Length: 440
Image (cartoon, rainbow, N blue to C red; front, side):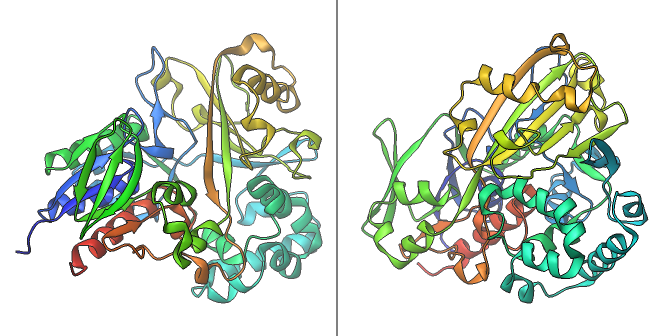
């Protein structure tokens, strides 16, 4: 057996925990440093008084083909806690709700017969494609116009791209959208008790195999110290390691590692683009989407949300997917949006943002009244969604940085797949293998 490595991991999200578990199973000594109070990162949840289950701060689910996360759960002996019901997803078009799945039901969408046919044929072509590389040479906006036609693109797809990427929607390449389409399933999965219950179980499993996890412990710097690396903490202490893995955003990585920005690797990191995420979570006394819709895609006709009909891009009634009895009878609704970190939604106080978002609810359900609202929560993440431009595969930073023993693994590196816990597991396990196999 090789000499055990001393490994430090920054971040106890799914990527960091997955890497830590495999490294600990390989006999290495692992220490995770997490600035938050518990495991999870963007997948973390919260629980209100009277709830039996956790609710995710940002809406999450798994697809039936998410083999990396499902395999990990099976390895942990927790497969019996997986749930895969089939919810209803819909579009809001011209004041009406239409079922969203691209299938024979697409014929029910308010498109001309020719537009429906073109969209169906193009979607089938995407579903059967296996090589995504030619698709990254063209933007999704241009590909959709060319292959699905103006009507389908402008009524359905362009508003979704604007909603997802705001004023950068014309930059996103088609390989990213292809990956979204081919990976989807009609049944959506979660874990009994919520994602946080899974994350806590994964953290416990890491500890069981010998990894240490320190919560409420922000890392302030990473430095080179001879042939080893040092992690500096906010309390002033220093911890030395043979290998260090950072699962932070590119910008935070550059702040932590003084001097890295001056390298070609650092410049590559600084050129990556991303967008922020905002979720307002509402606990209501009555159902908002009374037709049973779980996920309602809302039209974004302009990157400027204040000029759009709705101030957010998705309305998700979680309790139309998971039984509200797990949440003390609350009807749980997400109002979610993706906007640049400098956007007004990141600047308003929570009460003002809740007021902005709930003011649009009567458009969806005219019966809605402010007294339906029992409680609201606001969650914001400046780094929530990478923006993959044309030929993005050639711009992705390596997992191994120029600093000996220092590695980076974050959502910008799972391309062409979209960020999420399934690919966070794959990325974490991949970087763990790389760290173990690398020569001293």
